[in-house]
Length: 147
Image (cartoon, rainbow, N blue to C red; front, side):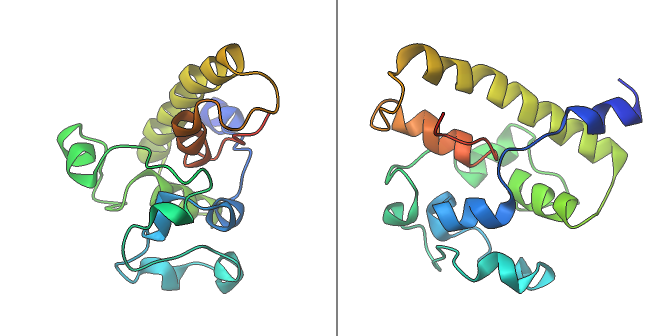
C-alpha cells in the first residue's frame, strides 16, 4: 500500500475531543503531562482523572489491555510512548511519520473490522447494554460505538 492509499483509508468516526468527552481509558490517559501539547478545547468537557476510574468510561466498564501487555505485544513505539491514542492525537494535530502512520492505521482498520461487525451481528439495534466491553473498545479506537 503506498503513502496516499494508507491515508485515504483512515476515516475515524470520532475526534480525540469527542472521545475524551464520551469517556475513554478511565479518564487516566494523559497523566504524564503530555496533555499540554494538544488544544485546550479538546479537554473543556473531557472526563479526566489522575488514576483509572471505570465510572468515567462511556459504558462504565473496563476494556482493553494493560500498558504492560501493550509493550509485550510490541504496540508501543518510541514516537508515542502512550500508545495508539497518543499517536491519533498527534496525527489529528498534523504530525506525519509514514512508517508509524502505516502501522497505526492498519491496526485501527483491523480492530474496527473485527469488532464492529461482531457488535452489529450479535446486538439488537439500540441495545447499548449488549457487548458493552466491545463498544467501549470501539470508542477507544475512534469508532462510534452506537450504530
